[in-house]
Length: 94
Image 1 (cartoon, rainbow, N blue to C red):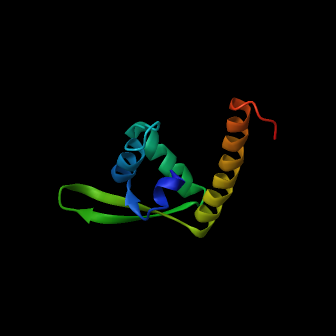
Image 2: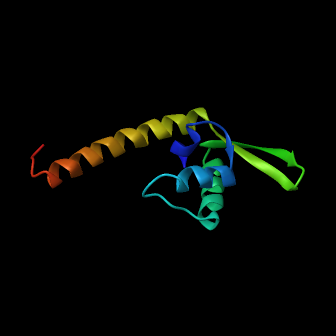
């Protein structure tokens, strides 16, 4: 979710589309909204409501400084992990 917000502020359904358009990833609304609430509560996201002509206000989410830092940490961990798995799959020792 943090990586999907790296592109910039977005509302929940837009984030769902960003994620679901990525090969190998898939989420449902029932997963996205609780995750957004938790990330906001943990201080990784800010949220602002914008009036909508077609229903309830849209909630736009944006990475905070802490969220950008956490994304950077997680990206580093993922890169190390995936390089290790790739090494094992190729029969190499690292």
